[in-house]
Image (cartoon, rainbow, N blue to C red; front, side, top):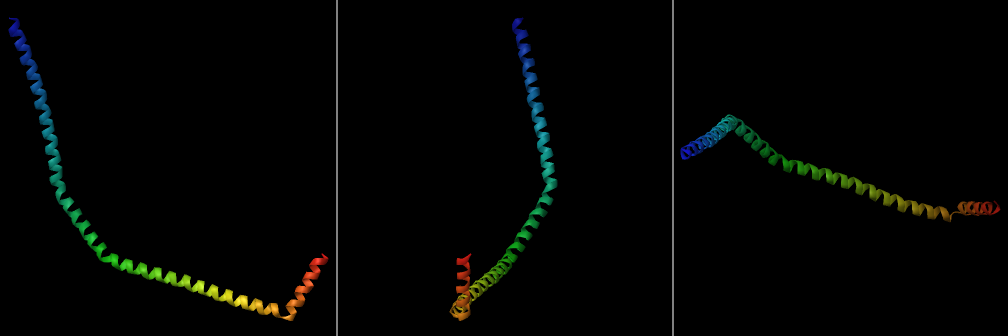
Length: 123
């Protein structure tokens, strides 16, 4: 009698475990089917997006050399402008040194320098 009761209890426990496993598998199957349905609906949209990305990347590949060339031209213009400014600065500086040397050699400058040195020694 006890053996029969224990057998019934084990059988009922196995039925509960089986029911839990089967219901879990059914829920997992429903989720997989829902995900599959979503992917089937999204597949054409994903293809369209992929085609659009491909077209954009092809256009970028075509336009990149043009932008690189424009960038090089702009770089060259900026470098030429800065080089012209540097050459002009060097030219004006050399002219100013020559002018200052000529002014220092004049009698008027020498008299003014002596007068200013005399004035500074008095003060």
